[in-house]
Image 1 (tube, helix red, strand yellow):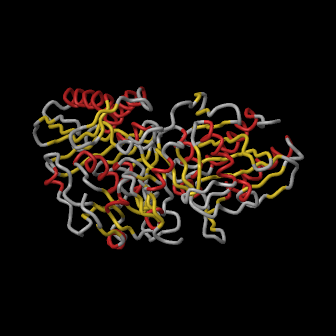
Image 2 (cartoon, rainbow over the protein chains, first blue to last red):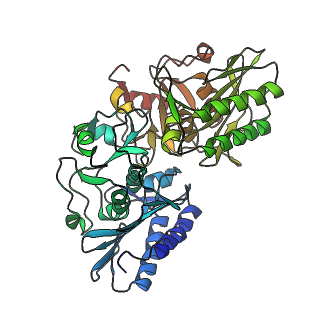
Length: 257
Length: 257
């Protein structure tokens, strides 16, 4: 069990996707104390995944966005039942179910499924990344391209950052932004208030594609500091290592959130 | 032939969608004199649609993004073979084929098909709007909502506008932005350099949903001035009439493009 059973994980993701699709477009939305939205689908999917993991790996820990916190030995599953709940709530396609498996604080296996798009992404420490059945090698942007590619940004980026890159898009899901960097659709991504469950799912996919992350300030991201579920203290930039510094220089913080 | 034969139009759109999907994700991209991208799929789809229209309506005019300009009597078809060519080129889902039918300078029937999402939208002067087989009545946002909904913007909006609305998204296609306003996913849309083929397809869908457009300055949009294919001289705001002024006040032009 070094990398988790990928076949099992993708099966769980598809099962969870069915729950989400069944109430897509007309969910009842509540707001949490931090004003972020949550739907019954978030809660139902978290319950399903927690149950599946507990049964398959009874001694593993689980940390999930909607509150699950199960202590375990050596391995930790980090879950986001719906990454992109706002996009999900208004009927946009960019939302999905995120699963990451960590050993100590090292992400091993990450998987992300966007049910409406039927796009499944996964990578282990040694294999992938895969986009559905296609190996995604060599897709990530390694050269500067400001004619077609975009910088993926948070939807409030216009209020918080001055961005020099010509084109930005906020698609709705942090993990989607990471996989679209891995695929070479985005030249890079600017991520804010990222939590363990987003990085644990997206980072193996990005890294196996040749990408990397660091804080906007240039400092390295210590995953160990996010293991309690608190969001990253600074914005993060994701891109190929050859582009990450030039991209970071295009981004200036102009307002405190 | 007051509204065009919708069944015929949606059939053409699906036929065109097959062409686009066959080279989606790896198209050869060229750049036009205005630096906007074009692919072989744009050209092939325009040829297909022009051929279909000429056969079905030999005395109608046709104006299309990639250069077709056929003079006709009374009716004009405005076509965008791929609206969202950049999104198409990098593998994002938000691109589609846009068809609008005008009588003199009045948009009658608009239809938009996003093949990767399998989302078909259409409306005539008296019917619709439809999203696939679902009548889209009452979906448009009529009340201020800055918790879930977003303002759809161009991908370079961060360099051109100061925007006070909390969340913005640039999905990649102007017509998609109009239909997502009609669906109530976006609270409104800010459109720049809009051309006849985008408005002719999107406006009937937006208007039948209860939405409207005007220039950011507050001036009415005279479609007649766009009949030669030149883009609108000012940015356009699309939303429900009750919201359009408040939204416009959130948008300030800070730089000339």
